[in-house]
Image 1 (cartoon, rainbow, N blue to C red):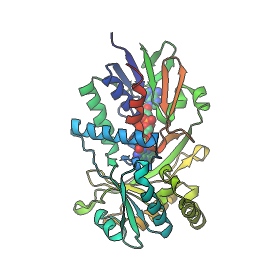
Image 2 (cartoon, rainbow, N blue to C red):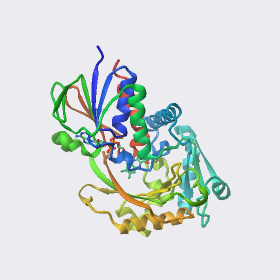
Image 3 (cartoon, rainbow, N blue to C red):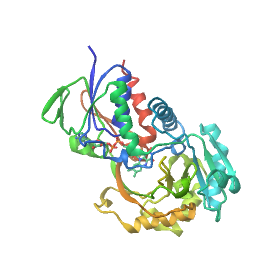
Image 4 (cartoon, helix red, strand yellow):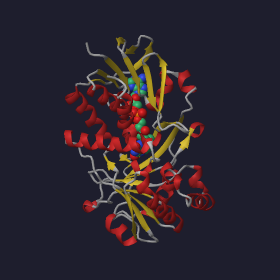
Length: 375
Ligand SMILES: Cc1cc2nc3c(=O)[nH]c(=O)nc-3n(C[C@H](O)[C@H](O)[C@H](O)COP(=O)(O)OP(=O)(O)OC[C@H]3O[C@@H](n4cnc5c(N)ncnc54)[C@H](O)[C@@H]3O)c2cc1C
């Protein structure tokens, strides 16, 4: 008889576990409380972003995930862009970090090249030429339109891998056994994966309180489709981004950049602002973002934060149409040191969350690593 796993939460982490379990022949029931997933997985940039991961296990998980995304695109026909990325340098200190990173990158497992301003402009039509020093071009990033990708992946897992998707289906309790209580039904199973993102606290408040996880709120914006079919090029990141992702901490030149930004624009540090842009196939440009943690998170969005994000983006890129069509925020759970948090609050019940700003990048690799332990 097949073993049965119930997965709680239909975001990218739940879907990744559903895929890997189904591949191993498990019967998979996935419960999502909304009609379609509404959490962080549909609110992000859609960047599959190995270049931001520190060398070692996180980078390996990201590269494995990237291969899975491309596989899903090939098998399903869903557009997964093999677009790469560009970190644009508009200050000398940013350029020094990129030079140093490019020198060390091949030995650390990254696939990237440093180019001058002319080559950067040729590759990145959106690059702001004013003050542009050059760019770090990386080949390993991929891109999806998040809400469409999550919907397509859910359908594909149901149609091709036989995953039973229940939505809307709120899980109200997970008990020893294990037993999952969903819409009044008690579902007995061999294993439960709780992948409820930043809502982990609702089902297991004590385990959450002891987990060290902190919620983080990010503000995001997007333009309408750009006129004339304008494409920004690969995903774009800025000099500000170099202080955000752990990959660049290997650079001795980084502290000078961090100190300059702290002194010149402390508001960016206070609000955790670094700027990036991605462009799904329909031509919209997704722009962001800010980071507010824990008790600083309020229910309302701030236009002042949006204006700071746009101010910084205008230094980095030029767009034919800067009008804003959508504004939103997303919340993820993040651990100060672990790239993902696994906890087992009851025998056979595994919580998997805390992928922070990298869930789209890491989820498939994390789930593959986890399920490789089971027959
Ligand atoms: C603004 C923003 C930008 C980001 N950009 C990127 C990016 O470009 N690249 C990247 O790699 N990562 C990015 N991230 C991070 C990434 O989006 C997250 O790490 C990832 O989506 C977390 O996935 P998840 O499945 O754990 O959580 P979620 O996507 O939040 O999914 C949890 C799901 O569980 C459901 N749920 C909760 N409780 C229950 C219950 N009791 N019963 C049933 N269902 C339940 C919820 O409805 C939800 O759909 C970004 C995040 C944000 C917020």
